[in-house]
Image 1: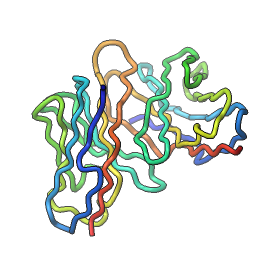
Image 2: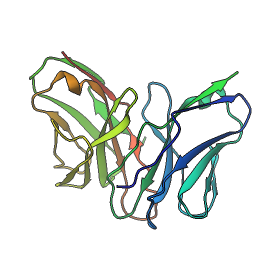
Image 3: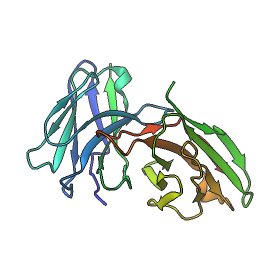
Image 4: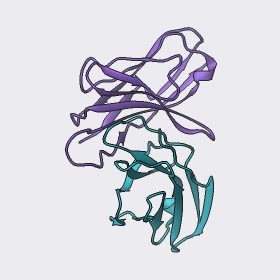
Length: 110
Length: 115
Protein backbone atom coordinates (compact mmCIF):
# COMPACT_ATOMS: atom_id res chain seq x y z
CA UNK A 1 0.00 0.00 0.00
CA UNK A 2 1.41 3.31 -1.06
CA UNK A 3 2.41 5.62 1.78
CA UNK A 4 3.11 9.32 1.91
CA UNK A 5 5.56 11.31 4.02
CA UNK A 6 4.86 14.81 5.28
CA UNK A 7 6.54 17.13 7.79
CA UNK A 8 4.92 17.04 11.20
CA UNK A 9 4.30 20.76 11.35
CA UNK A 10 4.83 24.02 9.51
CA UNK A 11 4.33 27.63 10.39
CA UNK A 12 3.28 30.55 8.25
CA UNK A 13 2.47 34.21 8.61
CA UNK A 14 -0.98 35.39 7.72
CA UNK A 15 -1.42 36.51 4.09
CA UNK A 16 1.81 34.83 3.00
CA UNK A 17 1.94 31.80 0.68
CA UNK A 18 2.36 28.35 2.20
CA UNK A 19 3.92 25.38 0.47
CA UNK A 20 3.09 22.04 2.10
CA UNK A 21 5.25 19.21 0.75
CA UNK A 22 4.44 15.52 0.41
CA UNK A 23 6.65 12.65 -0.69
CA UNK A 24 5.11 9.58 -2.29
CA UNK A 25 7.97 7.68 -3.85
CA UNK A 26 6.00 4.42 -4.24
CA UNK A 27 3.15 5.98 -6.18
CA UNK A 28 1.75 3.82 -8.98
CA UNK A 29 0.64 4.99 -12.38
CA UNK A 30 -3.06 4.93 -11.54
CA UNK A 31 -2.82 6.64 -8.14
CA UNK A 32 -4.40 10.04 -7.76
CA UNK A 33 -2.87 12.41 -5.23
CA UNK A 34 -5.50 13.73 -2.85
CA UNK A 35 -5.16 16.43 -0.22
CA UNK A 36 -7.51 16.81 2.71
CA UNK A 37 -7.54 19.19 5.62
CA UNK A 38 -8.96 18.79 9.08
CA UNK A 39 -10.02 21.86 10.98
CA UNK A 40 -10.19 21.66 14.77
CA UNK A 41 -13.07 19.51 16.03
CA UNK A 42 -14.16 18.53 12.52
CA UNK A 43 -13.80 15.62 10.16
CA UNK A 44 -11.37 15.87 7.25
CA UNK A 45 -12.55 17.64 4.13
CA UNK A 46 -11.36 17.27 0.58
CA UNK A 47 -9.16 20.07 -0.75
CA UNK A 48 -7.78 19.12 -4.13
CA UNK A 49 -6.52 16.23 -6.22
CA UNK A 50 -4.27 15.62 -9.18
CA UNK A 51 -2.83 12.89 -11.35
CA UNK A 52 0.02 14.34 -13.41
CA UNK A 53 -0.63 18.01 -14.12
CA UNK A 54 -0.68 20.91 -11.74
CA UNK A 55 -4.18 21.82 -10.57
CA UNK A 56 -5.89 24.90 -9.23
CA UNK A 57 -9.21 25.31 -7.48
CA UNK A 58 -10.81 27.90 -5.26
CA UNK A 59 -9.13 26.52 -2.17
CA UNK A 60 -5.58 25.81 -3.25
CA UNK A 61 -3.15 24.77 -5.95
CA UNK A 62 -1.42 21.44 -6.32
CA UNK A 63 2.00 21.18 -7.91
CA UNK A 64 3.05 17.65 -8.91
CA UNK A 65 6.64 16.73 -9.65
CA UNK A 66 7.38 15.42 -13.11
CA UNK A 67 8.24 11.96 -11.76
CA UNK A 68 5.11 12.11 -9.53
CA UNK A 69 7.13 11.09 -6.48
CA UNK A 70 6.31 14.29 -4.66
CA UNK A 71 3.73 17.03 -4.64
CA UNK A 72 3.16 20.37 -2.97
CA UNK A 73 -0.07 21.90 -1.78
CA UNK A 74 0.04 25.66 -2.18
CA UNK A 75 -2.13 28.04 -0.18
CA UNK A 76 -1.61 31.35 -1.92
CA UNK A 77 -2.48 33.60 1.00
CA UNK A 78 -2.73 31.88 4.34
CA UNK A 79 -5.46 33.03 6.68
CA UNK A 80 -6.04 32.17 10.31
CA UNK A 81 -8.85 29.88 9.12
CA UNK A 82 -6.32 27.78 7.23
CA UNK A 83 -4.78 26.57 10.49
CA UNK A 84 -5.46 22.85 10.30
CA UNK A 85 -3.91 19.45 9.77
CA UNK A 86 -3.28 18.74 6.08
CA UNK A 87 -3.16 15.20 4.80
CA UNK A 88 -1.72 13.97 1.54
CA UNK A 89 -2.95 10.53 0.47
CA UNK A 90 -2.88 8.36 -2.61
CA UNK A 91 -6.06 6.92 -4.03
CA UNK A 92 -6.08 4.51 -6.93
CA UNK A 93 -8.89 3.33 -9.10
CA UNK A 94 -8.17 -0.29 -8.34
CA UNK A 95 -8.17 -0.32 -4.57
CA UNK A 96 -9.34 1.85 -1.75
CA UNK A 97 -7.37 0.87 1.28
CA UNK A 98 -6.38 4.32 2.45
CA UNK A 99 -3.36 5.38 4.47
CA UNK A 100 -3.65 8.89 5.89
CA UNK A 101 -0.69 9.14 8.20
CA UNK A 102 -0.27 11.93 10.73
CA UNK A 103 -0.38 14.81 8.25
CA UNK A 104 1.16 18.29 8.61
CA UNK A 105 -0.15 20.63 11.25
CA UNK A 106 -0.12 24.15 9.85
CA UNK A 107 0.15 27.04 12.28
CA UNK A 108 -0.74 30.50 10.96
CA UNK A 109 0.47 33.56 12.82
CA UNK A 110 -1.37 36.85 12.70
CA UNK B 1 -28.11 18.10 1.86
CA UNK B 2 -25.44 15.54 1.01
CA UNK B 3 -23.96 14.24 4.23
CA UNK B 4 -22.53 11.46 6.30
CA UNK B 5 -24.11 11.10 9.72
CA UNK B 6 -22.78 9.24 12.73
CA UNK B 7 -24.48 8.30 15.96
CA UNK B 8 -23.85 8.72 18.76
CA UNK B 9 -21.50 11.69 18.66
CA UNK B 10 -20.22 10.99 22.17
CA UNK B 11 -20.22 7.74 24.09
CA UNK B 12 -18.80 6.68 27.42
CA UNK B 13 -18.97 2.98 28.15
CA UNK B 14 -17.34 0.30 30.25
CA UNK B 15 -14.99 -2.47 29.27
CA UNK B 16 -16.72 -5.44 27.72
CA UNK B 17 -20.10 -3.88 27.01
CA UNK B 18 -20.95 -4.36 23.35
CA UNK B 19 -21.67 -1.21 21.40
CA UNK B 20 -22.49 -0.12 17.87
CA UNK B 21 -21.69 3.17 16.21
CA UNK B 22 -23.92 3.85 13.23
CA UNK B 23 -22.92 5.56 10.01
CA UNK B 24 -25.26 6.55 7.22
CA UNK B 25 -24.77 8.42 3.94
CA UNK B 26 -27.34 9.85 1.55
CA UNK B 27 -25.17 10.17 -1.56
CA UNK B 28 -25.62 6.63 -2.90
CA UNK B 29 -21.89 6.05 -2.51
CA UNK B 30 -20.52 2.59 -3.07
CA UNK B 31 -17.53 3.00 -0.76
CA UNK B 32 -17.68 3.48 2.98
CA UNK B 33 -14.93 3.36 5.56
CA UNK B 34 -14.20 3.68 9.25
CA UNK B 35 -11.15 5.44 10.70
CA UNK B 36 -9.90 6.07 14.17
CA UNK B 37 -7.89 9.10 15.13
CA UNK B 38 -5.49 9.19 18.04
CA UNK B 39 -3.11 11.99 19.07
CA UNK B 40 0.10 11.90 17.04
CA UNK B 41 -1.05 8.98 14.90
CA UNK B 42 -3.35 10.71 12.46
CA UNK B 43 -6.18 8.78 10.84
CA UNK B 44 -5.90 5.03 10.66
CA UNK B 45 -8.29 2.94 8.62
CA UNK B 46 -10.18 0.22 10.49
CA UNK B 47 -12.39 -1.35 7.84
CA UNK B 48 -13.74 -0.35 4.48
CA UNK B 49 -16.47 -1.56 2.16
CA UNK B 50 -16.51 -1.36 -1.60
CA UNK B 51 -20.22 -2.15 -1.81
CA UNK B 52 -23.03 -4.08 -0.14
CA UNK B 53 -21.78 -7.31 1.44
CA UNK B 54 -18.17 -6.46 0.49
CA UNK B 55 -15.89 -5.47 3.35
CA UNK B 56 -12.16 -5.56 3.91
CA UNK B 57 -9.67 -4.86 6.66
CA UNK B 58 -7.79 -1.64 6.95
CA UNK B 59 -4.67 -1.15 9.02
CA UNK B 60 -6.16 -1.59 12.50
CA UNK B 61 -9.12 -4.01 12.34
CA UNK B 62 -8.48 -5.92 15.58
CA UNK B 63 -11.36 -5.65 18.04
CA UNK B 64 -13.83 -4.29 15.51
CA UNK B 65 -16.51 -5.73 13.28
CA UNK B 66 -18.48 -4.17 10.46
CA UNK B 67 -21.34 -5.12 8.22
CA UNK B 68 -22.75 -3.66 5.01
CA UNK B 69 -26.24 -4.96 4.48
CA UNK B 70 -27.55 -1.78 2.89
CA UNK B 71 -25.73 0.64 0.66
CA UNK B 72 -26.37 3.67 2.87
CA UNK B 73 -25.37 2.16 6.24
CA UNK B 74 -22.07 0.91 7.58
CA UNK B 75 -22.18 0.27 11.34
CA UNK B 76 -19.05 -0.24 13.42
CA UNK B 77 -19.41 -2.88 16.12
CA UNK B 78 -17.22 -3.27 19.18
CA UNK B 79 -18.16 -6.66 20.63
CA UNK B 80 -16.05 -6.29 23.78
CA UNK B 81 -14.63 -2.77 24.01
CA UNK B 82 -11.36 -2.19 25.82
CA UNK B 83 -9.74 1.04 27.06
CA UNK B 84 -7.28 1.04 24.13
CA UNK B 85 -10.26 1.59 21.83
CA UNK B 86 -10.86 4.97 23.39
CA UNK B 87 -10.54 7.22 20.37
CA UNK B 88 -12.22 9.57 17.92
CA UNK B 89 -13.92 7.65 15.14
CA UNK B 90 -14.78 8.91 11.68
CA UNK B 91 -16.93 7.36 9.00
CA UNK B 92 -16.43 8.31 5.36
CA UNK B 93 -17.96 7.53 1.99
CA UNK B 94 -17.16 8.07 -1.65
CA UNK B 95 -18.03 7.03 -5.17
CA UNK B 96 -15.93 4.34 -6.82
CA UNK B 97 -17.26 4.61 -10.35
CA UNK B 98 -17.45 7.34 -12.96
CA UNK B 99 -14.87 10.09 -13.18
CA UNK B 100 -12.23 10.38 -10.40
CA UNK B 101 -11.22 11.81 -7.96
CA UNK B 102 -13.55 9.79 -5.75
CA UNK B 103 -13.04 12.16 -2.86
CA UNK B 104 -14.16 10.98 0.55
CA UNK B 105 -16.86 12.72 2.54
CA UNK B 106 -16.44 12.44 6.28
CA UNK B 107 -18.91 12.36 9.11
CA UNK B 108 -18.62 14.62 12.17
CA UNK B 109 -16.94 12.00 14.31
CA UNK B 110 -17.82 9.91 17.35
CA UNK B 111 -15.78 10.35 20.51
CA UNK B 112 -15.68 7.06 22.37
CA UNK B 113 -14.36 6.59 25.88
CA UNK B 114 -14.02 3.09 27.31
CA UNK B 115 -13.38 2.93 31.06
